Image (cartoon, rainbow, N blue to C red; front, side):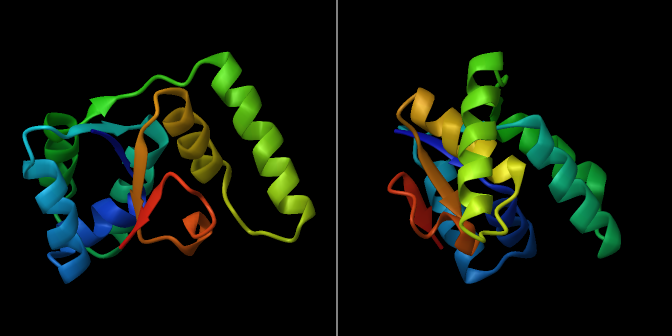
Length: 127
């Protein structure tokens, strides 16, 4: 199974929470293929830096455990359209979140997240 691990899920994982344990279980499953997009690395590093956590260890873990998914122009366009549609309906969803949604759809992957912006996304597994 293919999974995109959202920033919110990585943060739970690095904090060692019960939600993070669920992320760990997915990562340890030999049938899991884990993906991340570059912007999520930046989001996680920013959060951990503000919390005075070890960003180098976290960065190395993300790079080791996940494949970097490159956003194509087509996926960026789809994410932009989705972002605009959600924002017109008063959502506060980020462009990073819509990039993950569009990327996940492009390879039939699930999204692992704690972020409530994913609650209506059929591909999402909410922690």
